[in-house]
Amino acid sequence: MTNQRKPARRYAQNTEMKRTNAVETAAKLTQLTERARRVGAAQGPLAPVEALMTIESDAWIWQTVDRDVLDMLSHRLVLQTEDGRRRELFMTKDLDSAMDAASRIVEFNNGVVLIETLDP
Image (cartoon, rainbow, N blue to C red):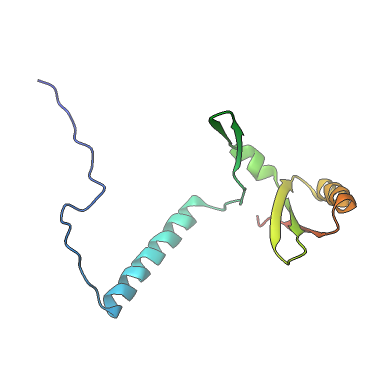
């Protein structure tokens, strides 16, 4: 006799729709917001990093960054485009690297390059 576990259901067994009033909706939204804050606090400080992906032939290759590398990053370079939008370019490990990179970018682009510190 084999002991097979059934996978946990990820959808409701009952397909009936339940209507909620404004008070129930607000209460549910409050619960979800509080849960998101608890989970975020438990994760600790996060460093925003843009996902990098390359496509070769039919394969999509995702690049990941090691946590130790993320901890070393201190500055972010942001390009201010002519239409006022911001485009994050990359992050550096110190201010000198950020300044060097920003000066090179400005030589090739007429936009404004902002250097921001990452929150500790």
